[in-house]
Image (cartoon, rainbow, N blue to C red):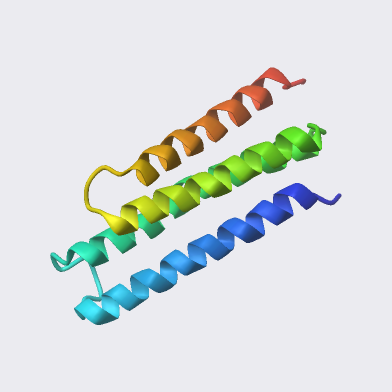
Length: 129
């Protein structure tokens, strides 16, 4: 069985995660902090951007994969995958740019949660024993 839509968004979101991981390593080296954030605001933001991505993306990809296996149409799958990916980019960008509230973080959070909610509802609605 092939999951071409899930494969695409898994690859894209893994590239985002790797970029955020690299930024976190750079911030750690700059601040000379191996564990925690050492009170460094940039390190805290980069580490949280990476961690937040790691916390949400796997659930989005699981839902996407389940829906693809269950035969959901490609239009909805691409829509959900695009929403997840763009939302994660917006959230990371917003968090990396400011300590406070930002439009990127807001859009990213709303988009990510919407994707997870809609995908979950479709999965539950289409459940068959």
